[in-house]
Each structure stands twice: as C-alpha cells, then as structure tokens.
Image (tube, rainbow, N blue to C red; front, top):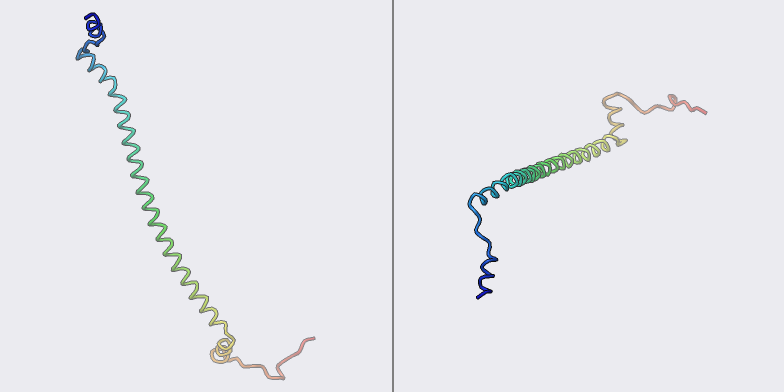
Length: 111
C-alpha cells in the first residue's frame, strides 16, 4: 500500500485555468509571427511562379520573332543573289540605262 500512495503523490496537480490561458497568451505573438512569415513565403512563391510563366511567354514570343526575322533574312539573301546575276545587270544596263558594250575604238589599254 505504501507504494500506491507514493505513485499518487508523483501525479502532478491539475493546472489552474488562469495559468493555462497565460501560457497560451505567451505563444500568440510567436504563432502570429509564424503565420505572417508563412503568408509572405506563400505570396512570394505565387509571385515567382507567375513571373516564370510571364517570362516563358516572353521567351516564346521572342523566339517567334527571331524565326520570322531569319525567314526574312533568307528571303532577302535570295533576292540579293538574284539581283547580282550578270545577266540581270546587263539587261538593266542596256534596257533602263541605255548602256551598251564598248566598241574596240572606245577601249583604251593602260600599261
């Protein structure tokens, strides 16, 4: 029986209601700080994801513009090549500019 009384004497007495409220009140600022921190982290995460999506859309648009510019460059290179042909240059010189090949008397050989 002596042991049974010893075990009961080791059981903690229930806390008073005021003490429990006081301890809970001490935790409120910390819980509020954690809540604010979690909210800020969540907002930052959402903002960063939105920014990533916006940047991906911008990259896709720039890639599309680059493709269009490259196609135009290739078209212009082809046009330049066709305009540089000797046959076309001779046709423009004779037709539009009224030029003709020089005769033997017009050619001067420089030594």
